[in-house]
Image 1 (cartoon, one colour):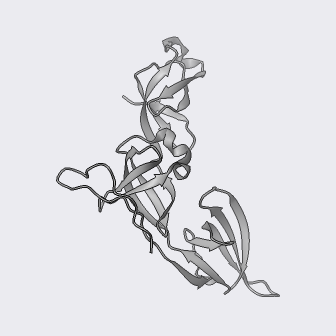
Image 2 (cartoon, one colour):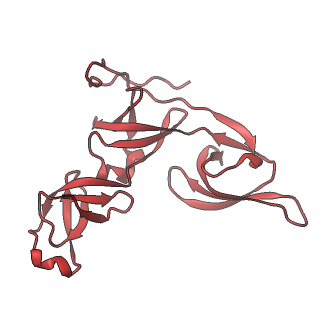
Image 3 (tube, rainbow, N blue to C red):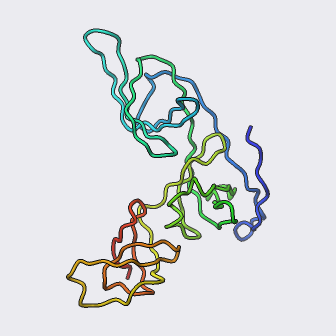
Amino acid sequence: MPVPGPTEHRPGPAGVGPRRVKPLGETTEVATTNDIKNGTTLRLDGGVLWNVLEFQHVKPGKGGAFVRTKLKNVLTGKIVDKTFNAGSKVEFANVDRREMEYLYHDGEAFIFMDTSTYDQIPVPEAVVGDGKDFLLENTKVTVATNEGNPLYIELPAAVELEITQTDPGVQGDRSTGGTKPATVQTGATIQVPLFISEGERVKVDTRTGDYLGRVN
């Protein structure tokens, strides 16, 4: 059973008292490769979690049937091809994915609040990774956990950020297609068109960091 975390330092929403920062508990189950489906998560190689991206049951004319899969490492994002004998036992991990709201950074971790229960959990910086470049307070994300441990977060596909520093914009530069570096309110640096000025809000792709357009 997961060990309860520390008590959080801030009150909950209006009318809601302080909430305990705690992890979410999850379990695993043993099944067979016949149960593999896209989107399921397997626990392999001593506890490493892999998401199933693709699978195919193959019954050759000779020899035993097998299952061909394409797997993605939950933590590193590495993608591999792996083949299993049909009917062999595998361990499925029950990954809990919940909508949560980013509240604040406590100096060691990012604190998120479950939008349905108001429970708060700390998510380590290593798990948030480059997502911090696009994470503003009150942003709603999906937090995935297994056995109480945060695995990863999923940001919205795009976010709106304010340009806090960049070279002066030049209106005549619209047709050149050139770009320049700009710092946004999270402290991250992105590339924007030459005509963008400080104080403007832009839409940014959270997967690539690409500029998507101005926000009117």
